[in-house]
Image (cartoon, rainbow, N blue to C red):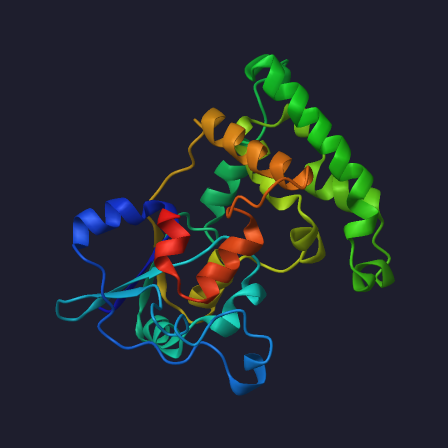
Length: 265
C-alpha cells in the first residue's frame, strides 16, 4: 500500500529527529510555468530546491509531504509535479485531522464553545482579553474594505461575513479564537469560501477513494499560541517593521521551497 502522509511545518523538528537529514528522493520540477514566471516571487536559485516532499525508503514507499494552512489556490500552482504524483499514486492519505470524518467534525463543533456560563474573559488573562477585543473591533471596522468585488457582487455584506467568521467569539474556547484571529486578515477574507490546502487534499483523497486517517486529536491548550498569534497581528496592524512571520511571507517561502527561511528565520 502506498501511503501519503501529511505534515505541518511546525512539526519539522520532530520530523528531522525521526528521519535524519531531509532529502527528497525525486527531484522537484520547476515550480512555475512560463506564464507564472513574470510574476514569480521566487528567484531562479530558490525554485525547485525543495518540494517539501520526502520519500520513506521501504517497499512499497511512503511519502511525507508538508502543507501550509492557507487557501489552496494561493499555493497549488507552485506545488511541484512530483508531490502531486506521489499523492495520486498513494492509496491512503493521513492528515493532522481527518476533516472529512463526521465524528471529527462533530468533535470540532462541540469543543468550540466554553462550558455553560463561561466566557472568554473568564479564562484569558485580563490584558490579553482587552487586546483581543481591540483587535476584533479593528477587524470589524475594516471588513467592508477587505471584501473583494466578487464577494460584494454575490450580495455578501460585511457584517454577515464578519459574523460567519467571528460570530459569538466571546463564548469560544481559546484554541478557536486563535484560529479565528489567523483567518481575520485581508487576504483570508478575500479568499473566504476557498478550502485550505489541507482540506482540499482531504476532499480529493475522499473523492479518489483513498483510505484516510489522522495522526492527531483536537487539542485545547493554546493560551501561549493565542498570545503569540495576537502579537503577530498587532505588529502587522501597527505597520511596525516586518517580522518575517506574516501569512503572505510564509506563503512566499512555501511557494519558493525555502525550507530554511520558513522554519529557522
